[in-house]
Length: 243
Image (tube, rainbow, N blue to C red):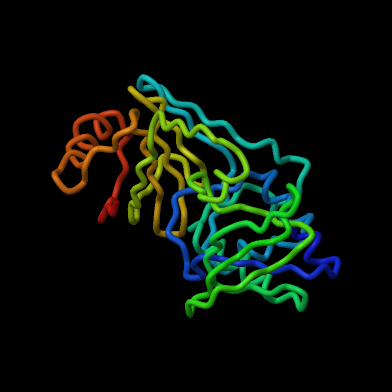
């Protein structure tokens, strides 16, 4: 897609919401991903967002732990993983795209795909101010997430939800291994920690089952305190936790 933007093709990007998203996905970019950003000329998208370098992982299981480093000896010192607030990274990518003269970025909600003789010719969408418009293109890329309404018109997806990730942000939490992701092979499922800024650490808890414990009635807090917390290494200086 980025190559198409750079080679002069006219590209229209329709985003449902152009405000900074608050997501827990796509927060840790592996070294291979960073190398791809360099190849595409997009490495500056992880600059000025307080992104943290990541040099490997630490694994914890049954009271034992080990450190696994990325094999980066043959690369420049700048090459490593990067972890960050996903929303800040998305905003930088949007700014980069919108800076190209042949790219038109606008806020709107795609309501349907325009099909002709089995070929998608474009989309119908509603603008931020409520106008119904159409956009035609030789190539239409649908990338609106796993719960996409448009996907149902293209295929018959079977969505299976065996578990859910619950994300917490820990402030001023000093992990055992700096600049590393931390994976706890816990019971009944893994727990992850990694920095997303110079002062914040993401904790991801995999909660099995299709139903997430309720935050409103205290089920979530009880699950974290009784099931998760006893299996977590000591994390010093945790001042606030936000779910």
